Length: 70
Image (tube, rainbow, N blue to C red; front, side, top):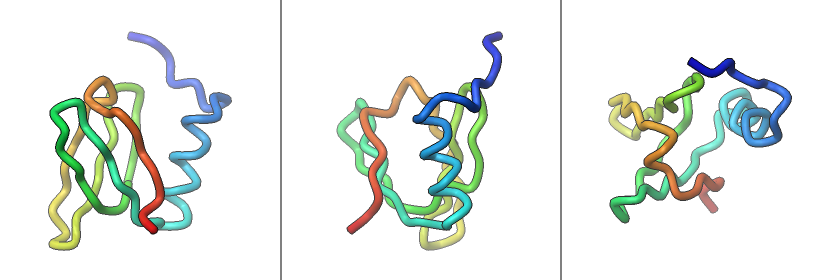
């Protein structure tokens, strides 16, 4: 298992989304778009909480992009 590298800009940006509780859009390789707040991340996955307080765990390999919701 690879080590979680917190010096990477992508990891730091996601941490900022978590700390600031920003709503984001996650585009997946399946062409789905998931909207919510990121609550945690690890080396393999990101957990997104939707408007109904339902967590969705997404494998990092399934993500095309993450951006703040306008």
